[in-house]
Length: 152
Image (cartoon, rainbow, N blue to C red; front, side, top):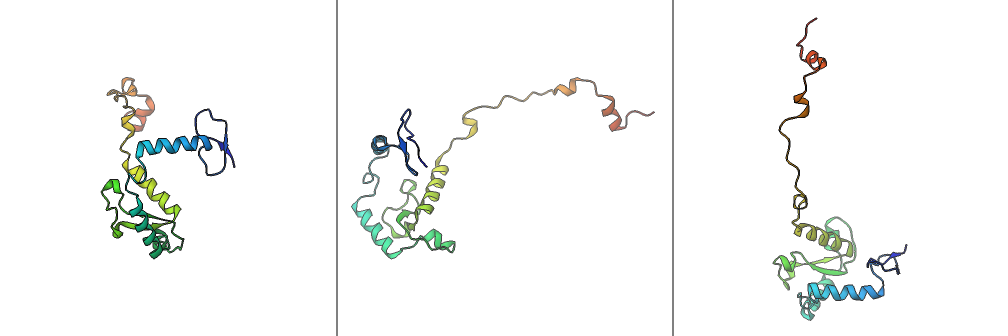
């Protein structure tokens, strides 16, 4: 199913799985590289690519799927502990062969764990009133009856 490009006011339609039209895909990639740095600047250079390819050849199936009794082909190598969290870049013990599905789940969980914003950062609940409105009104006869205060 097709939908509109996510760029504001862009009328172009994008196919399933796409986020931006061709023009805005290029712009988004440029912005991403400016904000995060290139893959090589982040540590994914030729040396990493060679190590990842070697590891993927030795581990052709997704390690996370195998732990759950499934057998899916691995398409990438990810660091078990992310580089930004202090993980070793070229240590094979920090590598994990993954399918796209498992990589997406792991990346989402890592991203979510890094977010430290709480709802209280956006609003502060109003102070609670000390006196309840009902305490200012005389108790009804029904309340007194339920407590056994009236005798007939």
